[in-house]
Length: 204
Image (cartoon, rainbow, N blue to C red; front, side, top):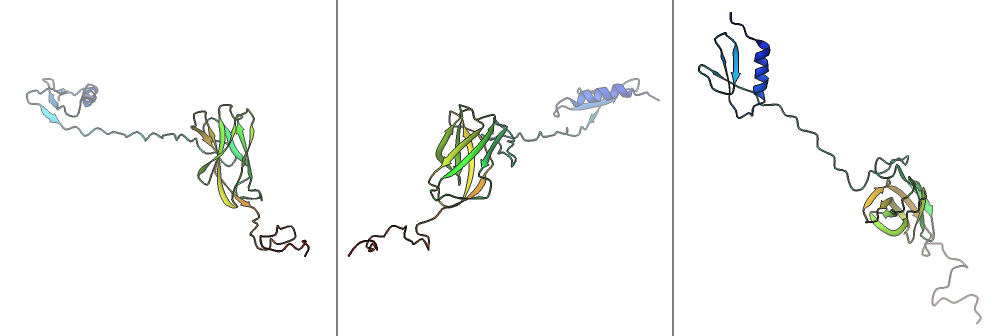
């Protein structure tokens, strides 16, 4: 019985599998009964049908957004320049009374806000004009003025000197309460008289 050198045959087969799929593979037995594989034709050779090579698609790469990941509830930022970037005050879903319509944000950062960075706020999806320049302090106070009463979403955003977003906080919701002069029941001695209304304190 002819002897087939299995290690040599397998080695030859694996080597041939590296040949491009378009190449034809042939096999035959030599005078000693050994199985031969080659990409060159040979008398009495048979063609070898190779299965398509299995390919594995790499996972899609994750593109990092220009805006760094939002901070979590405990103030630990998921990535970016600052390890901590959080609106410390007011808290999420807090009701605030301000008849002047002023809203003060306290923003904590670690490391402290860089001198080359600028802290601003996005309210209801729109960038506010108020800004605080980095001064090396770990806590910043950002005052927003002229805020209408009602519910508002707030996000603190850090910009670099070129106006690019460096990092942003998690978004919170606040409810601003302020008294309106047109509110029913707002009549009294401390209310200014309207035009055409007699002044009780005036003489006849």
